[in-house]
Image (cartoon, rainbow, N blue to C red; front, side, top):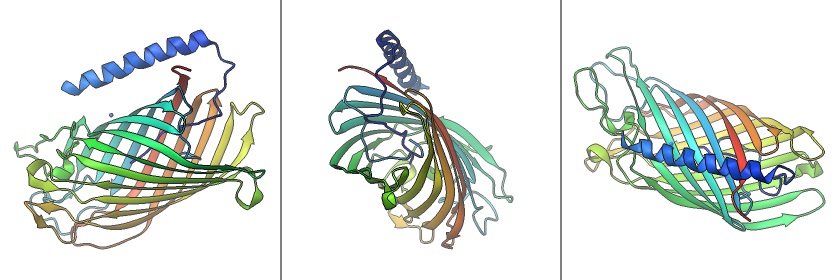
Length: 328
């Protein structure tokens, strides 16, 4: 999954308070409309360990494009363990720094999935995905002359709010892996570590994001394979304004993805899971006080070869984040 970057003490207090009150009102209205539409949603960051500053709010949008290798050996029909050969995920994120060292995040995705094997008619569909509610707690912080070391944990449920009724051209329901939602209530857990001032270079940041999605049984008696992801980003900040309102980070990213085998009707689907190693680059910029944009690209450099495993081949993510003050 992906997170919007929650700056902590870098929030600039010179902005007009009336602006923030008005922005917060618009933000709450936006969120209410977003969740009302459910009846018919943090991407790359130089520092994932810090929580949002106390009393702060954050809204972000993250657009994620993922391409997978076609499933080998498909002759007729769509396999029960199929994943999208191409997908787009639009994540809407709201984060609230409700207490010192704590924040609360609500993440709602809108999914578009496309499957094309070349031997069967292609299928595509769009719908609301499963929402997540996460709490982050920073349990360690140490400041020094070279920078700051921080560590945090996050956890929370993934709620089955997503659509699970997409069908193919003949009206047959698509497999669970091609649906925007899973129909299952799952558990997300994460550990984050940030080290600023690596090798005594104040502008060099090492960041590790390790998280797992532990899945339960969902739609069509399917338990999708649980996922583990480790993402390490080594970023350098070549530019920073005096008031830290504008800054630019860029650096290489290394990501390991592990997916367990699916289970359908309690039967393990051997070879449907596997491992992928991705390498890429991410850039992040603060364009004005409280507003940040990012762009990240990753490519497959190595993967396992399960009989029905569809490894991620390319991953592109970009987004925008706006912070504001909700209360003191």
